[in-house]
Image 1: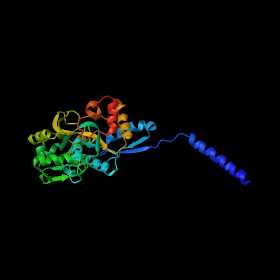
Image 2: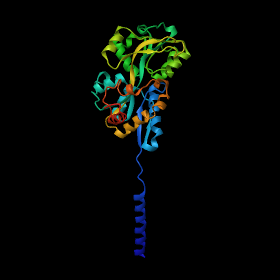
Image 3: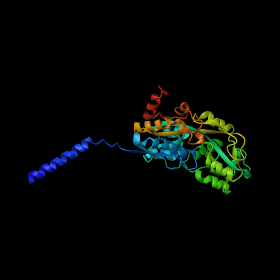
Image 4: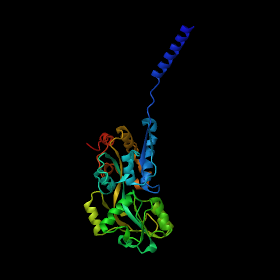
Length: 326
């Protein structure tokens, strides 16, 4: 009986082993997290849109993507450096400073493991002021209540650079609030600030909210100091916010700005980055329809403009396949 029992067990084990050998291997799922920005901003839409494209093909490449709201550009850089984020949306000037270890990244040193993936939309520095504030030009912010942006955000970083160029500090204003992007439109409408500063693509929901709720104007950001910034830094460009996008703002407004860029770190698996890039560019027309700020995107600009860090090898692989780079 014991011998019979042993034979049955051995037979059962053989069947199980054969089943395990013949069964197809289950591919491991990879989960990626993209750092974005405030939920009213275009960075959040960028991350959600990239994830939407990636997740459409999850059954094929086994990559799942999520894009939570974050504190913005600087927070996304720090999140990638700490391993909390796999990819992130970052202003072109923040990308430059992080890669070279300048300004608020100086203490950490150059982040040479940053890798570029592609560039997104342009982002003008946008100053929105209450119509009853008396603010008609950027220099009129002196002595006013101004939301300069939350620490860690791209707009705060850009505003700090502009303030330094102007010879300003927080004492220049009667109030320098640090509200994030989701809070500032309500603060303007509630007369808690006279003006808000936002580095963002257009049209934007937060600015739409501000100009719809109250009478507010978009203020030009021009002058010798601004001209010098644009000439000195390759990641800045002169920009025009088209008239007619927002209630009460029918004329074009001159300013300057940066570009939103999509970045990662060198250690992220080549296949994951390749599939992410492929998901966007293989479905490019669909992707461009996901937000008005994406309408004028073109592939040539997206793989070159505003990119300081070297391309990630996964992105390079896709661009070579398409014949876009050598």
